[in-house]
Length: 138
Image 1 (cartoon, rainbow, N blue to C red):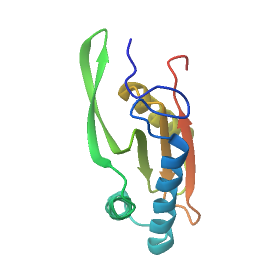
Image 2 (image 1 turned 135 degrees about the vertical axis):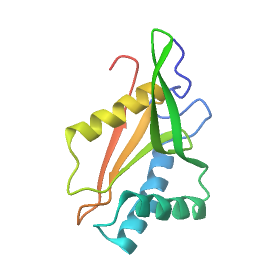
Image 3 (image 1 turned 90 degrees about the vertical axis):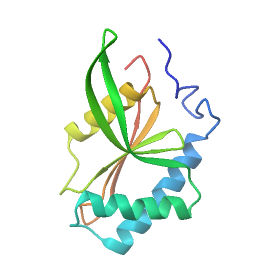
Image 4 (image 1 turned 60 degrees about the vertical axis):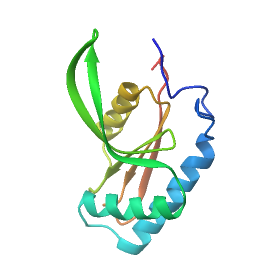
C-alpha cells in the first residue's frame, strides 16, 4: 500500500518540514483565538484561520472531501477542515477536546495517507492543540 503523504516523521514527500509547518499553523491559530476568543461556531474560526493562513503564505485547501474505501470499494466520504502543506488540520469549537476527537483526526490521517495532523479547539477559554501522528503501524 502506498501512503502518499509519508516520507518520514519530520518531512513529507513534498519536502515540507512538519515542525516548521505546524509552528506556522499554530502561530495563525493563536492569533485567531487571541482576536476572537472562545464561544463562536466552528465556521467562524475556519474562515478566520483561512485569512491567517493566507497572510502567513501557507498553501492550504479548505473543506477537503476524502473517499473512505473498504477492500477497494468506496463506502463513505469524510470532510477534513484543512490540509495545510501536507498537515491535516481539524478544527473544533467546544468546551474541551475528547478522545473521540483525537480518534476522528487519526482516522482522517489514515484515510488521507498523511503522517501529521493538528487538532485545534478554539471553543475553550485557552486554545487546545493536539499534534497527532499516524504511521501504517498504528
